Length: 546
Image (cartoon, rainbow, N blue to C red):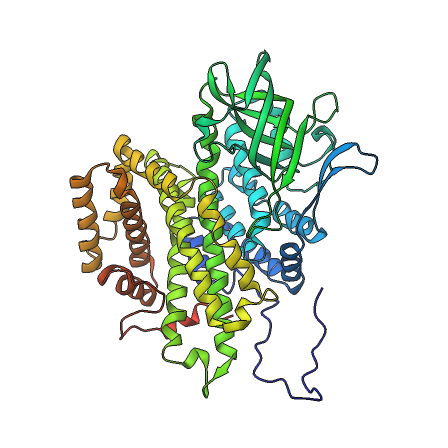
């Protein structure tokens, strides 16, 4: 609901010095970093689509939908009034409205078009959608990424692929064959194993061919009202990947029982559930014992999306902070004119632009037009997932602090983003899991190491601090080898080097200079805004003015 025009002349006082709400603006046309990335990464053909989506999702109506979806959490109805099991999750209408906008825009299906830069177009749209409400991005991401797994089972893909690719949304709980479009969820982790999925105990009993019967539990099932789920279970040949539909082929409900919904810190518009498979029918994908390798085709894509939605939230947090500072006065000046506030705001923008440049570059690699690009996608997704997701929580807090007490109140958007911020560092593999994955790729896959080296070499000679930083990384790689205890330090430095390389090559110059000065030249400081003197901050601040 859009708030009515406020009364500012009250019997007790006059309301002044208030920041106008940030409504009805185009998230694409006001984001120069995103516009440049779209052109740079070969996706200029999607500019009109991105602009139209940016205008629609930045409307007052869409922003109100995001607020409502985040405020009203899903409700589980395990039984109907007669005591019959129904396992139905009820979502607020605002959630369904935003799901429809994202799926109708083709966020999930764009990569499958095969057009040059299609993954970048997907990334750009999801990057904007998350700025309105991040919770809907999880099921949209899983739906699109599921295709990478289902393509390994031609019969399943032939049946389910067209409905997954449909640019439509049908939230009805009914057999997939009666729906024009479907969504796909994921259920891998169990309470005793967490990230160690090889400790899973769910059993898969062979029924003949690729058909199995699953019995067991899942501690986290993302988007439990999806039409089908990719899951892992122990078959006779070892941990294997399965597709489990909510409805059996004969039209009966598959026995997948929702035990409860998680009461989460953030991501509250989206449901995460604990479920049990009580003899649920499932179809094996890939060979028995190859479950992790099979599902990783999906996980690597969802890791990229985890990073890009964090980049989008970084952008929104920085925009909200700048908008507030440009309208709020304190101590005789606008906040944005205060000498100590300016570097804080500029540093937030620099961080957001560096993250955007990195995720869009990795998105281009996912098009995999060459073996070199495929190798860079393999390493880039893990690096971006590790770093960008870890930088968001502190950035969201710093942006919130720019609004003072008003930022800490749930009526504004930044409190919601602050609660949302940690989740993507946990989903799709925690920081340690991603850091170790990057370390293994560097140690075992020469093509990956060479692709990374080439990407960093592209900016050599453009800045002496950058050259020294990259040389130090190379020396450490030679000396330290694959020491697991140092993996986090290595991946942090690789992320900084990649972001610096992109900013140095593609600018703008004030952003690149501030990034180098604040992160490479003197080492990173503990808080945002500790930039050295002499930087040109106004051009940076202008990039987040709406």
